[in-house]
Image 1: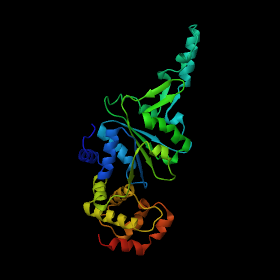
Image 2: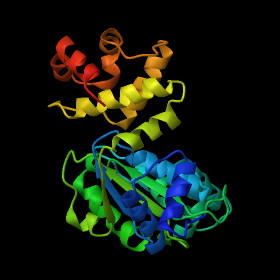
Image 3: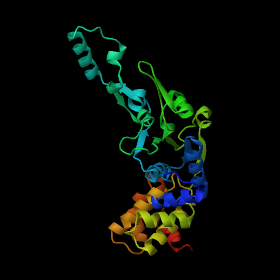
Image 4: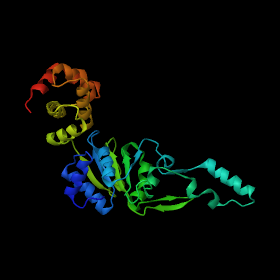
Length: 295
């Protein structure tokens, strides 16, 4: 069910295990109220994809996800025709002495629906629920694919040459994410509400970790979050995101670590840092400094 206020949006997201800032909850609330796509940018691991998952849970529907990549085309994103079934229909028509037409070959039953097309159609598994479509990492797709999306984002419809125009009876919630590996065209951004997601403040990240990694004790969670925040203040090539903090707490708990110490940090740094230069930069002296730094 759609929330009616920003506070209700915050509460419903929290019930789904997503602890949003008020600014982000406002952006989601307006996207739902105004029937506008929501464009999210931020560093990897700050919760962009998770917001779409939480929104789907909040609205009582399954998430439709399109993972973008270089070379993505309409066959993977929108639709393709079921050629074996079309050939069978053609042969049956010829056997019956009928003259095949476009209506014989290009019917809805022969459409293999991909996420973009599915988002425009009613949710048969959850009748009455608003569709939620995640277009993940749009910056990894080619620029021509951005142009292809403009009709969908503006009018919640797509044109299929052999079939016609498919228009949504109810506008889906479309969430697009970008890690800014390249700039996305202004024409696409103008059709969306925009929100930058930054690393959360310590208390909110601690609440996220407590919900997502409960197997780690409260004191370990507190020390781990403090350590990660001090890492982010360092000159690293890639600072750890919230996802890495959660994974780290789970890893520490799996190793039965109850208190952070230099050895446990060194043993598990590969969970937090993904680049050799960053691992080399965090030597024993810096680990010790981060561990003894005041909260």
